[in-house]
Image 1 (tube, rainbow, N blue to C red):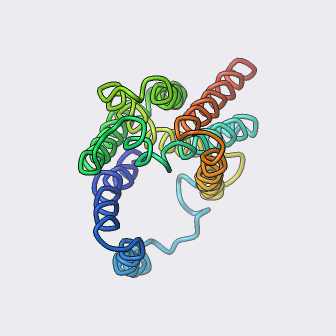
Image 2 (image 1 turned 90 degrees about the horizontal axis):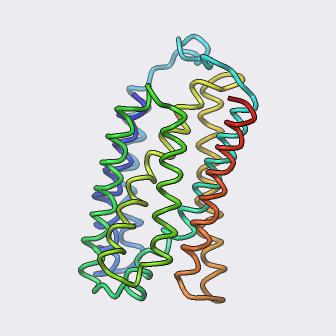
Length: 249
């Protein structure tokens, strides 16, 4: 179920990011931002009309199946580091693909579709394996993201390598968040809805921190340095997960 829900976010990357980039490039940045208002209102009305109104504690999945405060903290920290690392680089991917990899603006739009398609494929594959290998899925996705970001830093000037490593980052971005959400349903020390909200909040804080960090790096170094920093932060997330697994199997 977590995998099925994650498909929507991946489809947004496949369709929304390239469409917004194209629309912004042919108009003003306010146009794609404003274009989100109507779908947002439709979504709000749909949620208000159809979302069940029963108390969260009355649902079968209200509490984790194996509450573990230490594991909860480990996953939360790793997810935040991973999001920070991903968006330290990804926020500036258009600039990277143009300035470093040498792609024309039209090709960059196509590559953003490739990125989103890789994310969709990663979510589909991880979703099929998540119930059987929940911890391995999270560690593997985080390691794949680190490899992709560091690969872009090291070899992104070569167009073919840039496409390969871009696909690796895309293939990992959705599964990392999906796997952390799945962990919340297992290790939540209290109610799962609060654990899921905490994980979402931490992930979004990581997105903001990553974008800000990349913005601080750009005036001091070239855009490749943002991907190096993002890769190192994501590697740190892998270390947190592995350390937590060794200390508390």
